[in-house]
Image (cartoon, rainbow, N blue to C red; front, side, top):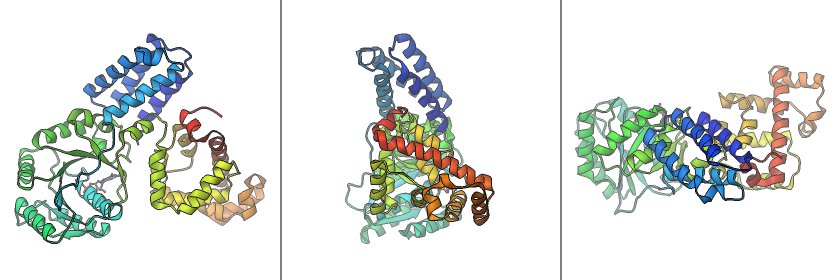
Length: 445
Ligand code: GDP
């Protein structure tokens, strides 16, 4: 996610860090780089201009040039302004009404509305212990109604049936009535999208909005659309009083433009981000944490939150202690961690949240088709004896060949794994010596 942008900005930040003195000239150079990186990532021009102007104003003021470590100070300013661009604090769903709280979903076809309804309903049920009902008002595509039914079943939430013969407003009113009488906390209303903005679609959703007066009207948008995401957001924002935005497909190779400009353009907060096709693939959107991720500082808080969701607490505590104590990290630990990572929604979702320096080392793990590759890694480690796992440096060529045969892989793959593991050990050592703070500042150990 946002890889290119992060890499480019991380490079600028690294150069700045090394500057003993910052002058207006080298600040201007750095900001030119930042500006280009943002434009290339498809951030809307007005948002880029406002951002650069804000950074410049603070940077040439005393805040940076007069400070003890000007590079650090400038990075601080960039981080704060990136956060501000995306909207300060996290804004959750507003459900503070007489139940049911009606949540209307708007967006183009394929944006991810139906999937997001499933994700949010599941999240509300599991984390917030709320009872949710879902209904589809897409009377144009019977398959869309079926899809929501399937998603609801997967999410373990109730589905209110509808048919293509009904009017969207009638379906929605009946669902609200049913939800009220059956004490649902939240009702999600999925609506019909079109492939592009069209008057009939806008009119229909505006009518639904007028009839239902939902507490939340969420605009769902595919982050991969880049500039088009922003244009669509603008059109929906003009047609409907949106209360928030949900960015989907941030797990893909989105260039980041939408994440950085949608708030500036619509003035509406990004409430959640979709990060995968599975129903667990949703994250609360925290502008401050996203800014850290984009600058390659990592998002340790989200990582910890995710770890809490899927991981055995006891084991996590033991692992943290082990790392902190600086004890060696061997292949037995590695195997266990891989298993835990799998529970946490895959390796790529974690890499996005690690500080750039660590992620770089870890990304040399052969990711992509992750599950399969992770199983191969596990296969290799399983073919070793416990002693070999704790002292892989003792492995001789003949033994490596046997391990490869046991795991059904080429010997090169065993060598690659050992090499990557060695690099990872180095990073972990550094981690245990300097702690998170040091790693996040990117100081070489
Ligand atoms: P709708 O037409 O707006 O209801 O969109 P859907 O919910 O049917 O989603 C369209 C496609 O996008 C489906 O194949 C989903 O699996 C996929 N999708 C939705 N959200 C995400 C996401 O956050 N990440 C990824 N990778 N795919 C997503």
